[in-house]
Image (cartoon, rainbow, N blue to C red):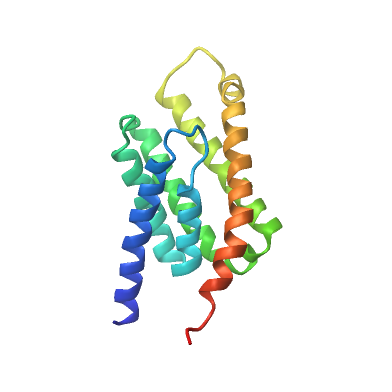
Length: 169
């Protein structure tokens, strides 16, 4: 199998795994593995495929969500954030084997995602509250999301990535 076909196959599997893990943890508020799979895809396949996979994972998960599709501005923001996560995985790949760096990556990417999607939500669901008050209203949910992703990244990346560099045999 040529390298390009191999990347397409890995990409398809990672998109499926990312979406499936999204549904697997859908009932656990603000704890998810979708972000991890997006970043992992970039770390494994590089910037291009990481960005494509991240966009597809968040796009398909949101489009087919059992909770209903989000409003268009929020949907587009989720897709963009997924692409940014995938590209980021390629950029910081070598440092993700450090639990501290992996945790920091998870925290920063999740903070970026939460701010961006909350901003899109604010404009999608008009409210009399100011933007700052709107953000404060979701701070507990964001904190759980940010901390859980920091922990998941710190635990999973140092275990998974070194195994990818091993040669068989």
